[in-house]
Image (cartoon, rainbow over all chains, first blue to last red):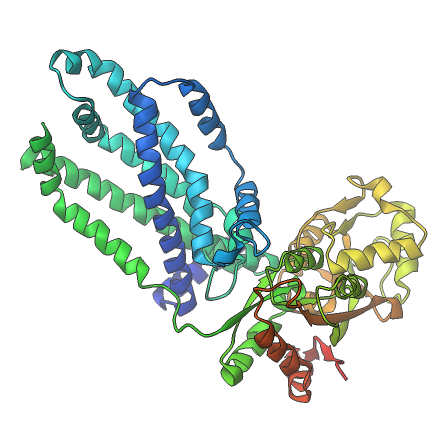
Length: 236
Length: 282
């Protein structure tokens, strides 16, 4: 049997038997990446709004730096977070190293720039279009911003999904700050790396397939949310 | 305007409720009972060989202490332990371990167990090493014709041993780095994967090799050389260097592993009827 067929069979048998270890790993992957996504949105969307709709000194510099940070290698982020959370580091006393919290922190740093930069571009385009109209109607800026956010919700959803994709798929950062500890900080990507290093290529590939299915499921849920949004807006 | 937004948000309450539920459900996946725990900075071979999966549940059951294993190369494990990011250090490079103790990071080194290194390669064996017992002579043969050799290149215990062997062969392979001598900078299993992919020779610890599944047509070519001896040591950090460390539980773990019962368990761990590690604490 080819390794791909074997991997597919393994993936399905793992899913059908609801393998307890697998469910734990999937649960932690989702918990870490969705928490990181939520925090990154709370941080990144206002930054995006600020960059997209307000003018201030060094705006382009800030945007340039954030854009560069989009390409930050996860392993570097992992290293920086490790050095800070290490018992010998600045925040060592918090004892956060090798915990899911450390992994969330690393992923927040990874995906906040993506969400900030991409959303700022979308909002900037809308702002260009409606600025004069809103000024003539004397719409206060906060209300104008809320209107932009609602108008741009589909595009912003795509931005958020891009952030989620980056978070759930990265391995370099969570490996360093999480330590890939069984039943504590093992997620899908670090489990795949571990199985590969044991030579269990079929099992590693099966986990990869499951990760892909998971990502498909999340994207499908987002599409559902999208249609729900549009029905309620125009139908309700 | 604000009112319209408020109404709009109200209508979305089902959606927000769904999102809220999703987050709550993931929150409940959190870890179970809060046992006291220690962090072990460990070499990869003990992890990849399945030794911890076999030993740790027994230890946790007896003592109620959870053991969190971070498996990295010996060099990285020592460095992490020096940053106090581990309570226990379990590695296999005696020189590094003695340096660690001498720098005041550990009160002493405990001998734990041993096995040996092996030289593996493809069945075709172009350098004709099969059946040899002299590891240094084997490396000389590889170097003479420039047959592909994969080096860990990650400052791990295996890498340190490999460099020592090259030194005994009075040959500096790094001059050929990137050519036939390839330093891949990764763990043992990943290194074997690369060697298998390239049909190249490499040095491995026996435990990782025995547990490894993607062997293809690879086999052990050189073994039994006394210079391939591979001892593992264990030590805990000191209160002076690492005030935040969990010293008492770390010592409990070491005492348990080095006790007669722990040593018997280690030697009893077998794959395909073969012992992976031989306890030698006494």
